[in-house]
Image 1 (cartoon, rainbow, N blue to C red):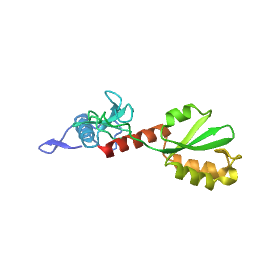
Image 2: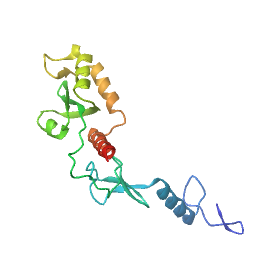
Image 3: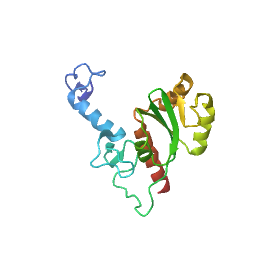
Image 4: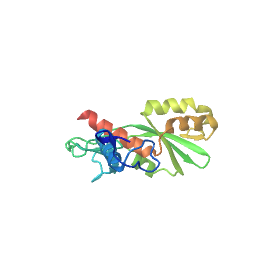
Length: 181
């Protein structure tokens, strides 16, 4: 336990804490931690850059947990939304579609699929490279491929550590908006 004054201990330790701290010192450590590293919470309003509702609160203000846009910073409404080209991977039954778009919500809304597997940042050049890479799995001249081990391993690599592909896309949008000022 930490001394309060004259080297006397401050009081009883809290439960099974990894360090013997009294409730008062636990509160001080928690306050210091949230000041130093922030505390995750719902944003007061959706992020203007990416639309996420999850944020990190610091004493100086909020930032979006998805794209790190500072809440309250004004987006230049005179500029068009940032463009982020992505290669998408969709599953429908036993096949995977590899396509590209700059507007994935609109594009994926038009394609029948069971699951969005992953996004990869890139344009038609990256899409073309993936089509060549998995050419032996291609179904005719379409953008659909047989869901074989090789392709599924590639998709797993893209989605490693990504719980939701949409959050990754939101982060890319926020980064693009921040880079243009």
